Length: 269
Picture 1 (spheres, helix red, strand yellow):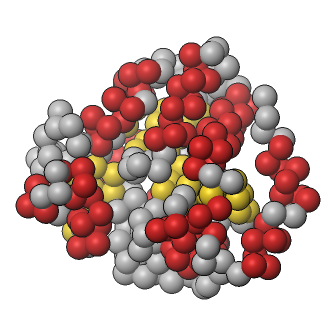
Picture 2 (cartoon, rainbow, N blue to C red; picture 1 turned 45 degrees about the vertical axis):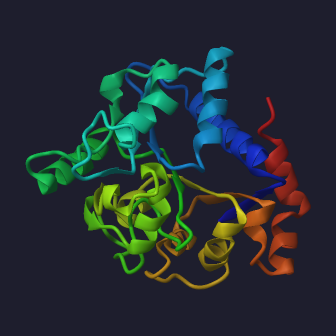
């Protein structure tokens, strides 16, 4: 497990984008060899997406041979609703890059059979050869995707009822009106993300500091589902200084050591 600590949100976003860019380029994707990328939504990855768009427009990066799988989608929200994750991804990322729309996979929260939709999503991931790099964000309560506290750490893609903390956190996207916030969602499971060959989790802001502490300094706990990634062979947590406020001083010093500094510098291009 690695913890990459950058000074602020913008630098953390840029580092994450460079890491994704380098992984895709090093993979050398082609017509018979697609790079498969898992993607999150929310406010945290927006800076990362902006940098990836910049790299694409500058000619550094192509998504022509990339397949993406998004973490989650609300149930019952029209696909064209401005707060659906379909809308989020197309407006903030996909329409600005050269990805084939057929290769951008997002769960359908309006499917007639929601369980069949979840099963089909898992099958699509398998058919794509699995996820090469799954990028995620977390909530202040340590949930990843919509795997709320108490979720099974071996869970697969499924229907989930959202916790009140999540509904309250998402109300800002629905004019602060709790009655407009969806209460259910389709989400990849913790086990689905754990199956990825590599996982990168973005954690920024002081409001996520306690979750980061639970994620890396305490044991694996299903009440903090992000903690499961301590057991993944290739996990990188990318955070800003504000997110480290609850960590022990020696933990921060360890991950700011010379070895980690060199790891961070390697991404410059």
